[in-house]
Length: 113
Image (cartoon, rainbow, N blue to C red; front, side, top):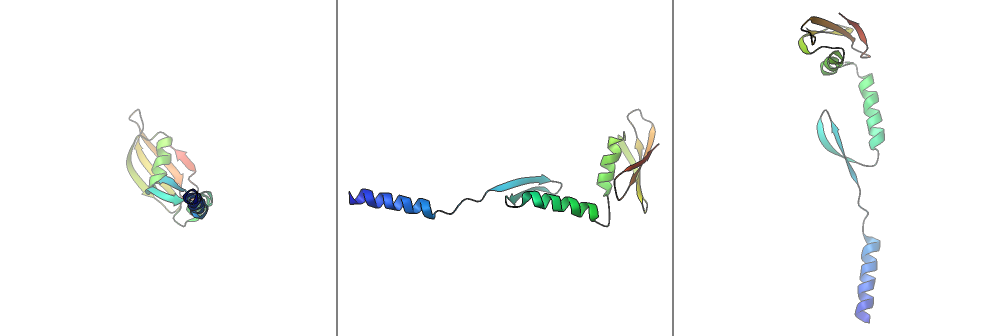
């Protein structure tokens, strides 16, 4: 009887004193895969978006090429960075020359020629 009571008491104490397990999330981004604590994941993502929009450099070359590809550029020949825009020169799917001008700050497509 005493051993059953001792076992039950030990079990109750171990369940009551066990620390809760903290969950982690996996974030897959341009920097690779990393573990993120589950607490403020959503707020952290929002902060990063704001930070990206505010940064002084504006749009990166990689992001500009991605936008140009969505406008029909298949092969990129040259990337020219001016004070206010990126000019992506390349070839479209038909083999014709194409040039896309993209605003560096907003990512807006200024012209496609």
